[in-house]
Length: 498
Image (cartoon, rainbow, N blue to C red; front, side, top):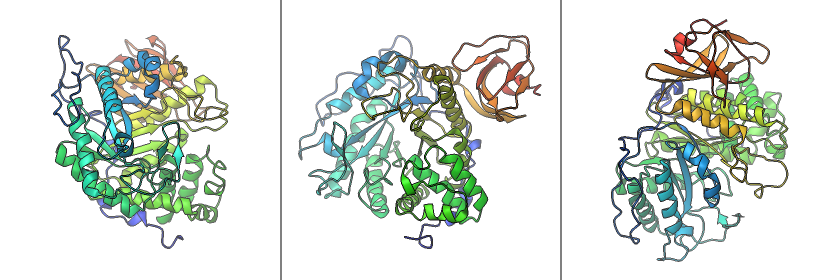
């Protein structure tokens, strides 16, 4: 497929209905109700397969948008930190072939335990439903990954049986507070999805019907197009609109740590010709095509929540947010279920890498992304040889890193708060307001240009990850994130900025 036949994302339907992402900053988690201190929230034993599950108490209102994804095999090591993230969200991926490896013989025990433990932690569980390849799909897998022998997914042989399985998942886990169900994972990648974009649309449409038949209040989520594919969607849209200089700048900001890591798929780009060549690569044409298919599902109302994956430098966030604002209907919320730090052979120290965690997470939130889940929570050194390509908040044994402490400070500040973006007088960041108090996470947008914030009564200040201390002097904000906490609104705290 060449440039002439590539899907034209600039002329997709419903363009006028796209949302301004930054305008949708309230309602970080739509979780109703509260739990008193005397109530026992431990789920009862799970009935046999097929039996109805009991109703459970609602989640508490004390929620926040900073969650994570972790390896459940290291649950005991991670438990102390996971308790600190209570009120957030996570996701877990399942497959039809793993739960029903032999037709008619289902084993829900592993997912039952995860649902129970998530409930006990007070962490919202979202579920990704994949098919993988087995008796239910036929065919021989080409991509087998990990100790669990996960495979790519493909179309089921019997769509009625697939709908039944999806409905079984929803009926079984709705009583545990599971409300959001993603259909497949990163379908733009051949190692996750063998089919075409049209087949994915067919599968997602069937799954959505089954989800809503089992629970009309459930939310259907797209597969979560990969971080790299989103980058090519960003630049393709700009090229299609004739914004060539912006497209080149966005490419180099977004992919600054990826260039050369996949050969000619992510090459160096300095002209519109070299950028068009990159876009015309077969893999990147596929990326844009699956992104367009995902957006068709969103536009058609099959999908009610957009899932974003982002593993790039924080310099790429503004272009991503601009893309999401233009390409997502006003009434469709956006959540980032996978946010991380891809940095092959990265040489940043723990503090600088932790500060990047803060910047990426808060920039996404300030731009209207409703939930941010860091991946991985704890680095697993057995996953890849060499340096840590994707940075964890914890060491493998659960020991908190500086990044973990900083991420926790965001969760503490955001718990039960209203969120507003901060972008004024050289400052970038986000503000959390609860009652008559506000906590700001801010930094200077220019590396060599400090911003001075005059102290107001009750102002406490300090670096992210540390407890702010009382200060009566002005606070000098550099390109390193700081916390500002005081009585009053964000506007009153930033009343005097130089």
